[in-house]
Image (tube, rainbow, N blue to C red; front, side, top):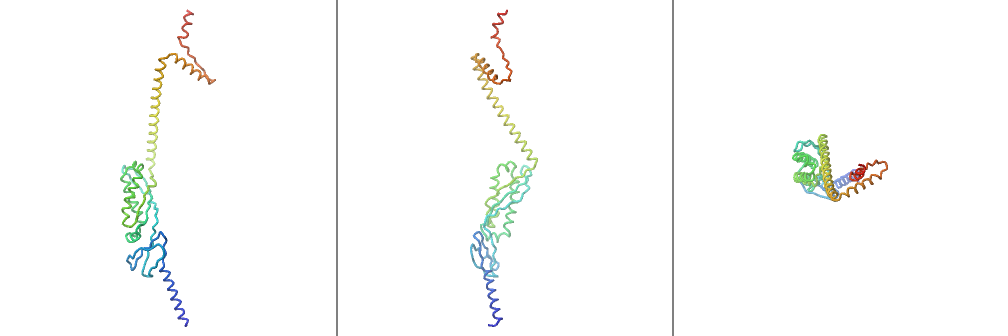
Length: 252
């Protein structure tokens, strides 16, 4: 066999091997391939191994795993005119690979932009107290609105969570003063309730002692005993006038 023919055969085999390798595609379990044939959508293939027609079929690979996307901090003015900076996180995944390629140019970027604009729009309609206290309800509302807008692209938004709310220093100081005033109010109420209960008990004790005058003396002696337990105490012992009245009369 002439050398030129041999070279031609080897070259042909080499080309066939290259075409064969370029035609064989392998996709993982979480990947899908959107196939275009002569520019028209042919279908979706994967996972596993399959063949493409070289120079005819074109494939775009799509990842079906859930994507965690951080929404950059957004400057928002709440309904009660308080400026805050809010950032969030969005969880979404591709449900229809064909739509995610055909209906939108870059679904990742588009989802991020939709999340940012929706975050500013929704939070601008609520007051600061609601933003701090009703975060779960706001998260559900954000998820519903974003999911409705991404559904035509074959993208499912499963969760939206507000991560952090950054307040101006003046608002933080105002909240601190408000919390301190609230603690003082509660302390005064508790103290007043304690005084009221103590006065009720003293009133009841006074009624009992008024019925039995000797009990006053017994209580007095008990108090002296309690004071005498401390050796450094100076005890002033008042003597009832009735007790010394008899001695005063004898001296006259």
